Image (tube, rainbow, N blue to C red; front, side):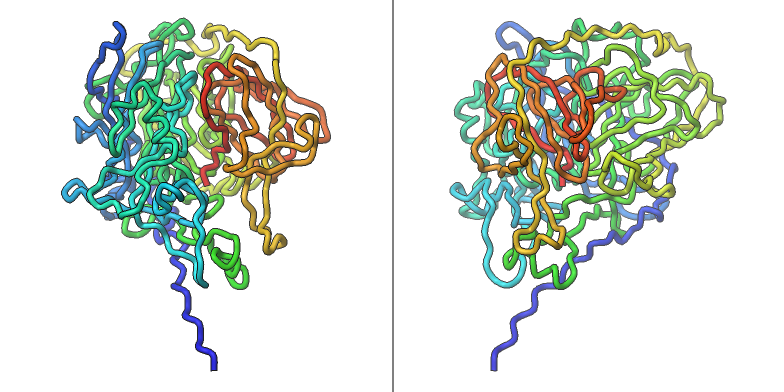
Length: 609
């Protein structure tokens, strides 16, 4: 008689225990991110450089309304190591000035402050993916591990890799970009023997960076030249194969670059913005908003699925028997909307103009924003700074990582009016076509705006009369390049519809129409010459829209073209320069960019899952 095989451990629940519909809405005022305190002003080569020492730590914060009677939510967030009360989700805002460098020591402080022992992840880490893989040691780091046996491995519970990317920075040196393989573990007292404590390129960049001598265990020092148009940037983790979880746990913040010839006089736009030393609750008229979807458990903790959730017989495709990662969920949609770290807040707005810098910080969700009273948005900027001219828009489509700079005029709205900022985007992957809008009772609502009388005069320029700085167009094209977005099915059971998304090229490389998916470890295929201007034609062979982000530069959106149709011009609000563009299914999206900096940089889809 054969012995019965041991049963595999039960799969954890994949449904949040606190439904979004049970969370009260509009009971707490919006939290407005304060300004990150700088550590020092350095004199470097006779010029001033703003210096920060910023760590990521674990702490508790009231994300959910107090009416629920739940404890605060454990989150991660950035803060100044010299100002313990600055740790926040989202992080305080770094205020930067044109051509005044910012230098940051980014510290991975995900360890117990008392014992110095590492803190495991708040969320389930799938160890079967191609990821940082610290347990693989120096030889196995940054590779996909292999597993044996009959049962899928459980979540990784070791020290967490981390490296920060400033999203939107241009002309930065490669060692300061937050390359996915330049991660590092916290300088904890109990790193398991044999673990890699840094990624492959951390060691390389530490040797080659002019600031490498300042790097130390658990930290790296990056510098940003700020030699670009004033714009709305943001910073977040960028570690290989774990970014989705690290960002979901909370660490992200705005970085606002101001000044220079491409800025406007300070009194032309609504203000003030938050200033250093402002007390909590100070009244401001320029407000950054990061919109995210999250889910929660009934103990107040963050929920994130711990299983792909496949039922028999498809669960037999899980690694190690099959080729499907057992924990990773390709596209996850939370059932609660969180703005600036609070679920469904409200904001009192005076009868005047406001400037909102809006970031879609969702992992997978596209947002389609609209005021429920039809009040328009005047878009004045995107990721790369001001547009050529203001654009009046009734709705704002924002893919993950996209930003818009808008003015909303409440001067003609009756005091006492309550406006709801709606999300008409779907509770599903965005396709670009007609889709069912988000649940109108939960994710279809974002925040509430309560109009109150003005307390002072508004001297800002009406948005339709703004004269925005001119954009110098890029020059003649040196190279046209074709790249592709692809879905690849399970090799063991293609008909199951289980797929992974891969970037790639086309066959033949010039003028071909056959997609050629590529893996991370394949040879580099995009290798522009320094100083060259290229047009990339992004062929999307998948059924979903993808927000494509190119590091190190900004680009112009040239046009879009269905595979079997004619080109059409950029959408409203895309007339400026950007760093993230939506590539729609079965279309060619063309972008034009100039490569000014040598180095190793990535381009990728910003659907983090």
